[in-house]
Amino acid sequence: MHLPAMPRWVKIGDAAAFTGTTPRAIRHYHAIGLLAEPERGADNRRRYGYGDMIRLLWIRKMADAGIPLDDIRTAFEGTIDIEQSLARLEECLTAKAAAIEHQRTAVRHLRESGNPLGLLSPLVTGRLRHVPPGALRPADLDTLLVTERIFGPLGAAVQADRFIVLAARPDLRAEDDRLAEAEAALDDSVSPDDPRVDALAIQRCAHETALLAAIEDAGLEETHDDLFEQYDETADKDESETTMSASEAIGNMPYDFSPARIRYEERAFELLHAQQNGDTPHRPTDQPSTASADNADDHNR
Image (cartoon, rainbow, N blue to C red; front, side, top):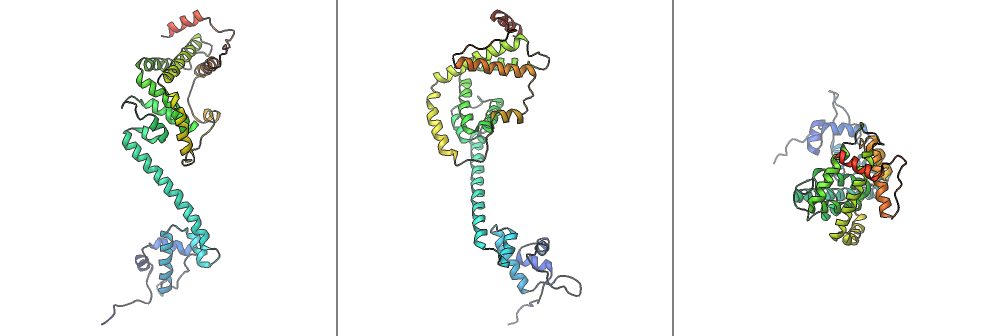
């Protein structure tokens, strides 16, 4: 029996083909000192022998396992304990596996929900699971997305109560739409001292109060303890998103509010805070009377 012809050395293309890599990768191994430069023939081309091929095969095996090339080189040189590299690699792979599982869960929720709601945290999507299809508007999801980014899943899950009530109460949804339209009209042409600003803030305060009452009537607040327990169980498992303070968010999120709109938001917050704490809200000296505010409201409508 005659053996097939066996070369004493091969060129870089044949070496790459046998070891399952590429000539470019082999040249990179030479450049970083992972593989010594072989002898060159009369044609000035590299000649790879048996030892080179063995080294290339081991490099390929270790690289396929995820070991960084620098660690492979130092492991060959014996300057580090390969166990240290493997321990770091295992930690990295564990983190990657968790990230992949997170992605799989997000894709599954997205398919189940059929809309971007599935990309929010499970705490939020679970809270809204009984909302009728189509009841959540794109703007609702946008709001939840921003809230989740700023205050985390728990903040967004609590805020979801608002949209549960709006989906069930057409009257409150209609008022919410009316206020949103009026808020959008507070552009740069409106002065922050315009009586409509305060009048609208009073209406927003009344609307938010009605929403809170509807949330309470629906028994949603009674389930907050369960919501907090769910959050505590999952808080340590999902730290992929960092939260920021409200002041940081204001500096990083471009809302493009006019001075009048900013004054309106401030005034609405003051009124709500005062009402919730049983205080009498401060009224500026140039604040219109209740009758004037009502007239301004009629004009704004």
